Image 1 (tube, rainbow, N blue to C red):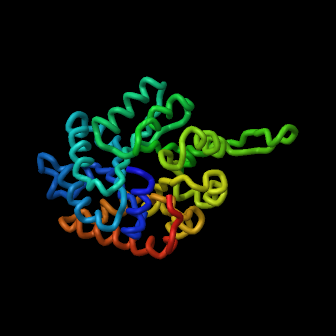
Image 2 (cartoon, rainbow, N blue to C red):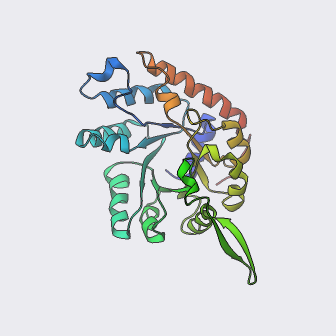
Length: 282
């Protein structure tokens, strides 16, 4: 999916909601537990209920990989069921030496029809580059995450040369944003920024004003949609805000799809109020 297609879909739907299909077999409603293809049946119901209010779906591959071959089959069937109008993200956090990343890219962009994959940048440019070599596909690089461990590396300060004589402190995540943004462009490269890091969004937009941000952590993790939208939205929207548990587990009963629809609709209604009335052409 191209950037123009994504931005157009956001403005058509008046939504920048991404629904996370982090489907845990132990958490789906009891009446589906005995179904031979329970995960797929659950996912299809969620997709049918929410597709009018979101523009993207994010599949956390760990929940599928954990159950082996059946999980991979369920993941492939799920991604194929998502409408072609919707941006499909493999939340796989891959990133390895170049020839290995090339195989990961082939797996998710060719064998399975994802539009984007999350990537860990720790091993440097050659580990990210293979994901940027597909037309209409995206690498979504980890920038600043919401987990406690972000303090271990991402929020460590470095000294950086500012001109020839002066040194200034910068966080490691800032170095990542500045460096990685040079490897691609705003039409094939996004960054993950956790919703609970709202105080950093203004600074992040100074570093990468045009790139899309994938923002997890709204809903069950307590991130504020209002804060994110006010601090991080750009003229093209530039946001995909993910909600997973708050939507897909809105009910444990047979009405789970109806409840998921209601929550997704609430998000869409709020997002509509934050979107700019016009945008720059891409």
